[in-house]
Length: 264
Image (spheres, one colour):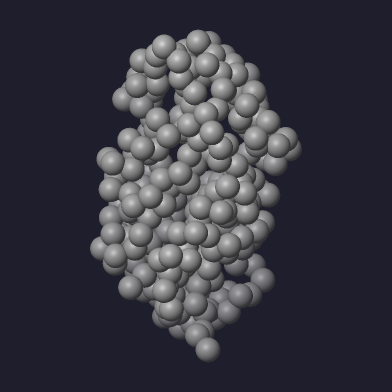
């Protein structure tokens, strides 16, 4: 049975903090990790002792107790129409799990009726920003031959472009209905909610995992929970509390490339 290590990472970690965490976790060895653009260390072997979570929270340090053999072998359309506050309020409520995602998406898309397709292109070109560390994380996955799936509650207009740009293997999202070059305010076809995300994730995992594969899922909102619950390793990334409470690990302070340090 594998023993457990403690991985800690943050934009900046002081030596006294490392030593204090090593003492708390009764770790004998501290190893620097370099997979991500943050300061990161693996404390080995580590015990899950009281005080580790509290110290990390106070110091702004992401942490995770990981098996020692675990290895790897937001879009702003609304302000184009001056309705960003309305859209944001609905989105936040859905992310917290307070309202049904499908209904929230219908309401948000209805507010976009009449928007010209050129506005979507402007959003992609000018405003769509990747999470910090996303490209480094994907490059790390690619080096070990991992397959990637972007499954989004957003729209294919964006995910298809991201798939091509980032070299993703698969992408699933909802499709905006368009007539005469403008949004109709409706979704065309299936709405990609939490259950649809989970189904797409399950199909791909079954196809690709193999006998010794590891399935990793990353999410931030309540809509991601059905998918996250299916993964071998689930990671909450700058997520809502309802999501952090159910995942294997949480990254609150670092970029997405910090995921790689959990498998070094």
